[in-house]
Length: 471
Image (cartoon, rainbow, N blue to C red; front, side):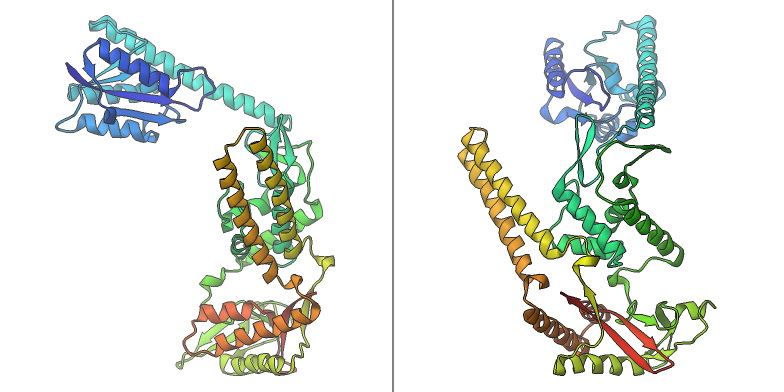
């Protein structure tokens, strides 16, 4: 009676083969007929993984490591076909030789091998055939995908905003709204990829796979030509025949901004700023950023126009933190005491795709359709009562969260409430900036929450604060 291991693999190849369950059943039946015991813990399985590289198969590597150990727990490895063990003959020979040194055999259920020289020859022939099949299949797949791309057809899952129906990309309205919002925030609000991701996650939006947004996820969406009808695959670009919802003008503007950002260095995420005024100060002459020029022995920074530092701006805007801080705090205090906002940036409906308020309302309305679907599934006997209750509870919680966000949205307020809310927000920011224990990041986030930018005019010795106002 020998102890054996059973190795199961089902690859991603488009082929007809036994399922993992069937391979396990046949393997156990073979073991029983040949007086081999296979403990449950010695059944190894790699699903949806190509067999061409053994290093990419975790359970295979685990099995080989056990077989090579000083006290290997099994004497034979059973596979359905030798191609399940390896399709690369070189690797097959290497691993089988390693196993022979540990007195571990490899046997195939469907390909019995005779003993001696003839058996070795037959086994090599099987390995040659498997390797040829693997190489030929990959070439055929690549050729087929190339033909599809040249015809303007899509080879993989479409991006956020679309789903495939009968081989044609179809718009998913609620996802399309998220994509529109991303382009709007990047082009019109000029937010960084990092800040857009953070904002989307705050509002509970999800990626195509139901995860949280990251700056690279946002970058992929902004740069994806699929949104203007172009199908790009392996350096092949074709015009697709499907509905789009991002205009070429908006897309091209985003690409222009992306390229410009790459040349000058992207706007850094808030969390990386070392000074609370970083990224906020603007030169009145050229519109460039004022950056930290140096820090004196007392730890106080001075700011200068970055374009001036590189010879592109002719006017120096050097100013010290000792002058900036009192002037900014004085400006905030005047607004708080008098309620008079003299410099504002108005976000009106003419320069927005969809407001946060409208997007939240759309998401709440979409929940109604989902509620009807789960009711229908229960009435039609598709879902059990328990499943219906669970789905309803999930939708209820999501609706409560959206309503809470809606009530916090400034556009939900009246004009008077809006003004009071802004004054209250400015006061909160002022208190955080003045607090002795506030960090640079906390001060920056507080100021950024109410002020879009601060323009410094050295010639007239003027500082202009531009507040966010939602009409």
